Length: 216
Image (cartoon, rainbow, N blue to C red; front, side, top):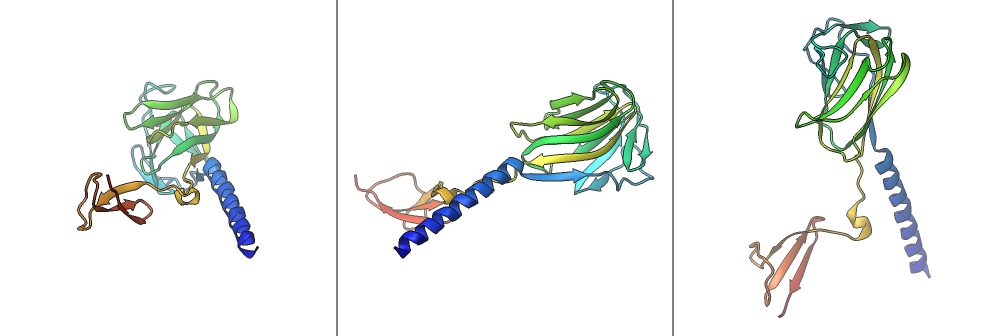
């Protein structure tokens, strides 16, 4: 009876742990950039860091509302672009699912824009603002392609906050009794392919080892 109660308690614990992990998988980790520490003496192409991410202000490109300009300033707690492009190095982050950017646009539809860029310099997703005023731009990366850069540009707008959502959780295989065979060795520790009529050691990714003797 006591053993059965212990098994029930163990199962309840596992179910609670699964629920917690699934919750973490959905919401993951969020990195919030407030841009409150931008050096007031910053110049174009000069790098500064926030939340261990390198960022810089550069000239606008043909993808932006205009090209070849790098003018910016500060409005209260916001970074203002008029026009300029902010680039943020994302190469140190894994499994980015979505990015949200709170902006205040002053120049009308399509004036403020944002881009997620992968290692081939392709735009994974891009978005343009709607009417003027405060709004949130949302970029998505549902396939969790490896991203190298987030770029935000405007001809006359301000960036208030940036939120980067990551899927950083994975369900522990041991929770479900699943483990992966990584190699097989003989009694001398030599890696071998599947053979018969000798003792083999199967080594799994969780560190466990199984001794087997296959007769054929």
